[in-house]
Image 1: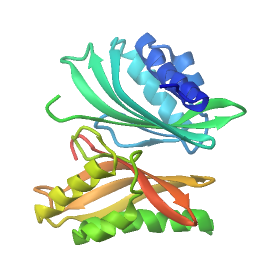
Image 2: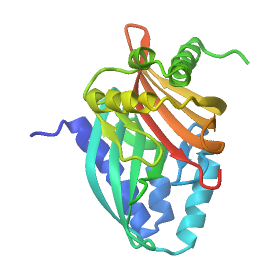
Image 3: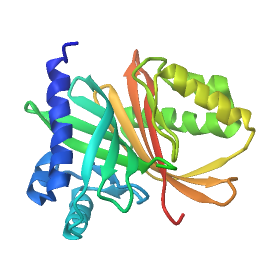
Length: 128
Length: 128
């Protein structure tokens, strides 16, 4: 099945998020996100962080911990409507105390042809 | 502060979701959602359900349990981009075994002037 160009670039932006996380690369993670007040990020079990200042502070703290994780992504489902796109995906996380599955929902907005993340919402699947 | 009309109608659609949940009203909940393959719903701790058939089956099961919950919504943050809108909100849930806080992210798409839910992603805040 041919993937529409919109979805292909959206999935590439989504992958860039996980690549930055695996590399603990704060500059790459910064490039993934829109730097605005409207961004929201919910790490598993955390309350929601709002605005780029709070979101980037969380990445600095998480990456500063130095824990390397590997994300095996399964069942990605991507949708685009104009310049808004989202990806629902299972994150199978290796490197945590035990392997866990996180259900994630990632939203991107396209400006000048470039997708930027505006929302990441993640929750651990119970029993995973 | 005046709320833009787009956001006002979006927040009304979001409220309709919680009203339907509190009333255990499957018809009202059905009216809230877009009936399509692209809808996704992640109940707290669940893996993600995809497509309206799976999503509505979950509501039938949840409402069939008969447990009445009350949702006190705090810190709603709503955004619209064209005919896509989302609401990030804390659900403070009364009526569960103990009061819990759920961070929720709800996405709606507007067709013919009417917002329909296409994604609900919810996770319990640890320690809540």
